Image (cartoon, rainbow over the protein chains, first blue to last red):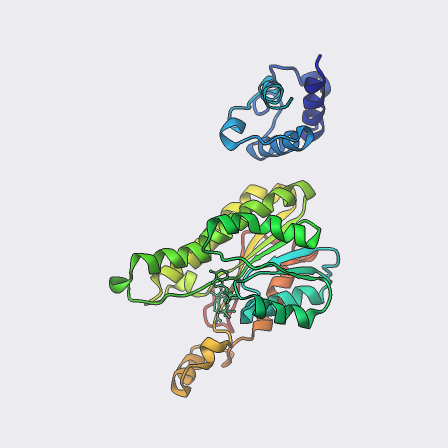
Length: 78
Length: 246
Ligand SMILES: NC(=O)c1ccc[n+]([C@@H]2O[C@H](COP(=O)([O-])OP(=O)(O)OC[C@H]3O[C@@H](n4cnc5c(N)ncnc54)[C@H](OP(=O)(O)O)[C@@H]3O)[C@@H](O)[C@H]2O)c1
């Protein structure tokens, strides 16, 4: 598992207070991990901070699963 | 009670009568205050009275780009996040609706309402991270009662109330409260200009029989900014001598 994936999952676990085992790549923040819309905004802010990148609002709206977040970050940080 | 030591407050319209009093009241409770307005000298004068723990960051609230940068500029000046945002700046362009020009309408909405939204949006980011925040907007009794000749102003002030209630619901789980203070008639250069006959008529409509002071508004803002008011959100605190009991 890549370093990015590792760090994304760690943030998700910390922010949503969920079991690490539940944070699979296909897990949806809202449907599977119990996030509300405010949590998703905060997650995006946390990703921006951790990876020193900017996630525009239209991109943020498409980040629905753990996998989406990892893909976006892999594409936009090098 | 009401200790604000270690908190940083951004006050718009701090060059004005009420804004200056709000800044002094917050500062007296220990807060660091960032004073904003368009007139730098007037802001410097308020700052000079406070001596320590204050910064002057001018901004024209009719300029959306400048507004979007104000919270960041304030945080850079103060070297700390904005914990307390006071949207106090406001202006009037009174006119009967049938004669009101589009720009009289939109300028009042832009400065009184849109700027407050933009500043709130910017300030919320840091407040969410810190799990603590206070947004307090100075609305007006006429935002609730309406007032002939002030369709634009009353709409902007009613808008602040609706906006605050909505924001309050969004961020309540993060330790952030969003409220309004609604002054009635407060002594100011504007009200000083009223004739004695006008004043007598006005005072007749106020149960206390007196005009309010800027300090009365400052005290209301201090309360809503305090830790003690953590359970008060989405509310409008009317400070009007009983002129309207809502
Ligand atoms: N006085 C009352 O009886 C009363 C009653 C109800 C509500 N209020 C509300 O209380 C608030 C303060 O009023 P006040 O009586 O203290 O009036 P004021 O002395 O005229 O102060 C108005 C403040 O708003 C600022 N402002 C106006 N246009 C601005 C702009 N484009 N950009 C940045 N700042 C701007 C002014 O800053 P600069 O001069 O530096 O531009 C000034 O500091 C207002 O929102 C007002 O609607 C007052």
